[in-house]
Image (tube, rainbow, N blue to C red; front, side, top):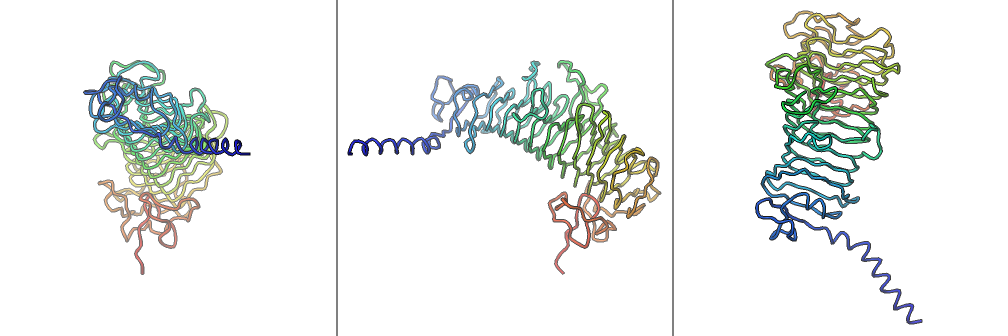
Length: 453
């Protein structure tokens, strides 16, 4: 009986090793363009020269730290990490390079400066992602010939092969087409800054349908939170005839949430820009929610436009603030259903247009508890709808803290306090303050914090 016992013990140890050893193998490697060689071991004393060498070498759980320097290369990431053991590419200072093409899962890209005039399709994006559980964090992407960040379904906007990705705290400047283009399923897009998007970058390729948008959502289940889109100017070199939108989709787009975002055109020139253009020309659009956002200095706040035969349904526009909108705060063309409540409209409509213009066949919209006023005290416009709607505050100064300075917090004597309807699912405000603080919701993106009695 002794031989079986002696055999069983090594087998048990081998199984334990197979379970626990991979975590111990996670290693930090180093890349340095000045003193590295790809023939080196990749450690601190003998770093690699190129980031691509790291991409061809790393295993699940590994990290590569990239030293300050210029890296004239685009990185193709094809090796995947694993659950709990992502592969991490992290800049350790100002590392300037030509971007990432990620076709793998469980990858993290952190802190790079990315700029490139490469014209090839995938290579022309700042970061191109086709994968799952990929995190693109805190990068500065500028002057590229296509979208700053593309999370791609590669022909299927609802692709399950592109899912659960995070795009967070990136700065995108002078990309082409859009700042961030999202496809696939259940991504988080949070805390990004997008500005000066260019329709046709000088010297760049000509793409069909080129435009200059901030965020483009396609697919299903995404959250866009605390992003800022600003200063996309028709006067910027390369913007010949852009249809500028802070947010634009033409479908498919379902179950998408926009909360605590800011859309702000430049104050120095009043642009023909829209806060959001939501249409269904290429697929189903439904369950789109805008809550606790700020739209300002644009032509139209939110434009819902039915193009295909299928209706756009369950559009929720709640507790947003709209400021200095030349035409309608919300424009609905074609049948739609949903909610338009608890929104604050200030200096909207140029004394002509109502805060809402809506097609007569949009009969399933719950509308009311909104406010509309003009800073000069004159009456708001009414063209386009039968406003005021039930429980609206009409022509009443909202008493924002400082609207010209873009501070839309409510003063303690604001008539918007407790004037809204309590809405399921709107648990906090623009700043994360719990709703409600009083007997009802405050109207607009902010809820005034009440102290204890």
